[in-house]
Length: 124
Image (cartoon, rainbow, N blue to C red):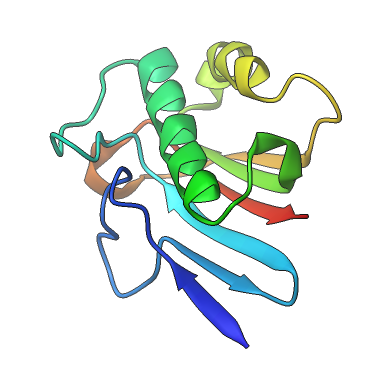
């Protein structure tokens, strides 16, 4: 059985998908863009955008009763791999021990001109 998770603090999905789905003892969080859920505005710069994407991830994790320590895998999509170091510095503020597995790609474009998008899988 699956359960749809939605946090009012994270931005609404920009397409026909859920913020997250819990199924089989795991939480699958859709890619989080760096949009402030309260204002609908996108942060500027890779550090601020990474922070906002991870804050949005945190809102969804909390809504489902999880936290960053439950994250086992992330995928980071970057508009430019040149932003890898700056993104990593912010990412390391959120994942401080027992790091999740991760993949990171440069992509041609992200929705709404974002510089970063981050998804996650979490388990308890």
